[in-house]
Image 1 (cartoon, rainbow, N blue to C red):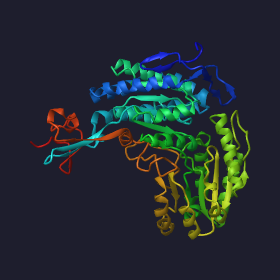
Image 2 (spheres, one colour):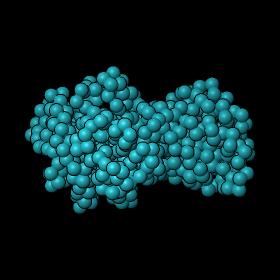
Image 3 (cartoon, rainbow, N blue to C red):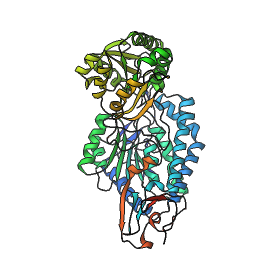
Image 4 (cartoon, rainbow, N blue to C red):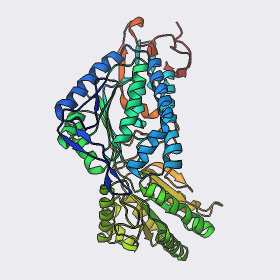
Length: 528
């Protein structure tokens, strides 16, 4: 359809063959935005897969420095167009233009792209292991074309053609098929234009980066399970993610999921006695950041029943009731948040404030705070851990430390878990009792800080046990660690020196790469 935005397939922008379209909405006005985007039919999706497979073969003979150059050029091009990208991202998501999109998320996006470029050049991420006595050598190599499904809440830093999954897959040497999120297709299109231009300027294969906007659910399952697909990265709802996982698992295809998380926060008695109002202010700021639409939003707070906890509850209740109501990303987020709060109430939680639709501009839900006692939580722990994605949180009041530990044992897997404790050590005994239980249920453990910020550092884990993610051993944030998801272990047994990948030959390919040679990590060449 000539009035529909083009898809990027096999190195060319062209009109989609599909006859169905959709429009994004302006969350602040609830009005449809004018641009129409196509729903790609299966033949078009399969064409993208086949083009990506051809690009993967081309990449096999390409120096890793060239992939790094592509990523660096892409970061430069994003920065040159940053204002326009941030403007349309704000229009499609209602997230703040400054500093949220234009400075913070934009900087994080280009920063992680450049970190990935550095990892592609330095190459230590491939975990090269060399056994000289048996002439057996192994390393992580590219896995094949990667499909990336981006979320609605971070259009740049987690976007399907600019975010962490994308850059990790590219830096690992794989082409990417990006499936845009329907909430911000225009933002994704602008980013794809710059990725495509950067690929052309740096001599990448034609189908190094491709973009489709939407598929049917059935075609999404066929995409992640296709024989030519190497792996998939997905961030989104648990229900949709598990459908894709079932399809990928049946076909034996790796899929890395970020699904849902309530990010439990435990506030110990000594911390409340010491700085209750300060913690309440931090909690309020964390829950309402981005209208609560962070995967690390503290959705459940555990307290011990005492006077300090009662005062804390009243303090937070007043803050929630008086704070302005932000705009949500979409009608679907609004609908699901209202339903999530209602589900918590039906499971036994008491609504302290909020709970209804509206209260802000456009798609919105009242700031919602709920409370439940420990006995009720333990009687229905699964239902009371339902994620209410948005500006809402649940307070759980345990009657004593024994019940607190029981509650922690019922928790599902989460991205983060946080413990606030007395700065002088007054809570250390109780901390030691509960931390082993919490530690096994979260990917990242924090002390005395809110979980909402996720630094792009090599030591970061943005992952965790199910249902936070589909596998507890991997992270979606943190370079070079996140690259290993899109690699396959390749072993070379008795292969002649000149036939080996450069990373496994006797000479260190760049003098900086770390390799395990006969049980010792070194940057040296193999001793001849």
